[in-house]
Amino acid sequence: MTAVRSSAPQPSARTMLYNDVLAALKTVRDPELDEPLTDLGFVSECSVSTEREVTVRLRLPTYFCAPNFAFLMVADAYDAVADVPGVRRIRVILDDHFASDQINDGVAARAGFRDTFRGLAADELDGLRQDFLRKAVLAGTDRVCRPLLAGRSSAQIVALRLGDAADNPDRERLRARRIELGLPAGDDDPLLVDVRTGRHLDVETLPVHLAQARLTRVSLDANTGVCRGMLHDRYATVGLGEKEN
Image: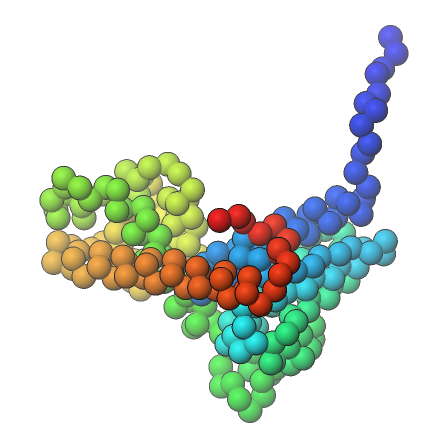
């Protein structure tokens, strides 16, 4: 019996590598907004040469975006691409930013933030990243628990478990951020926990926690909208993988 071969063209190795690199970039988040760089339109270009050299160009809403945020994004993009099998050389370039040269050179040299901004930065950015993760957990908590509040007493709310929330992307996103912070994240773990200690909340601390979670979510959503608008005012082109709104 003669085998039937598909007439559909097979993607080239270069195309497959490009797709893998773009998929890796989709995992990189704006540390403050907790949204993928691709969804935000921050990735303006990605190319793969025949020698498997990858060039990624990033852009930001303004020329004066904080350099620590910018450094985190460029460094995270570099690390994500570096983990893609088959990549031989990487160039991640931040364009149109007042500290572009320093950031691009520092990330390429695998220097930390402090060495890149020698004399200006006292520490690395681990603490800042943790602060952003705590905000992401608070915002995610509001998204997940808000539909569960109606008709429940305070005692019933603090007794909720993560597995009681709807099985949807918001819950799994919250779970992932809690894991990154080292917080309990199993289905049987409390839905509401202190974002610094991981301790189960009680009825007395519930109102303040819910208010803080709500405020954090509203703030992140508003900042995301502002950044999208400013980026589109600054650039006329759509970013690679940008999410439509």
